[in-house]
Length: 96
Image (cartoon, rainbow, N blue to C red; front, top):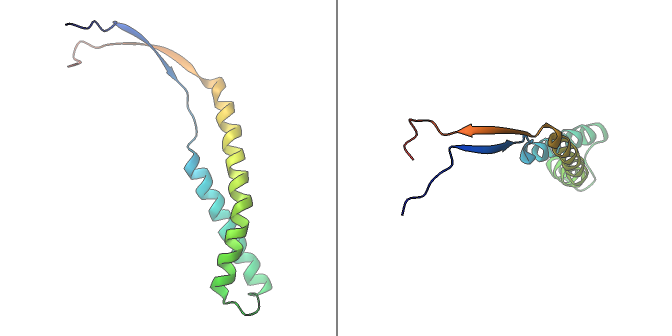
């Protein structure tokens, strides 16, 4: 049984941003903000400096990761306008 592969094929390419770098950037922004806030105001009573920074990073991460995901969603939807369709032709040297 021989399967015929069409000579030309339509290929759709859409450049989309990756989600993970946006989320990591959101956590890093929260960490920097937590360090700045704790160093300016001082650590909470009965807690170490690292514990105060960790807790504040966790709390701020909820907001910054949400904002980062919203920015990613906006850019992802905007990238739909840049969708391109190309005609791909199989080369003679292709082993498959």
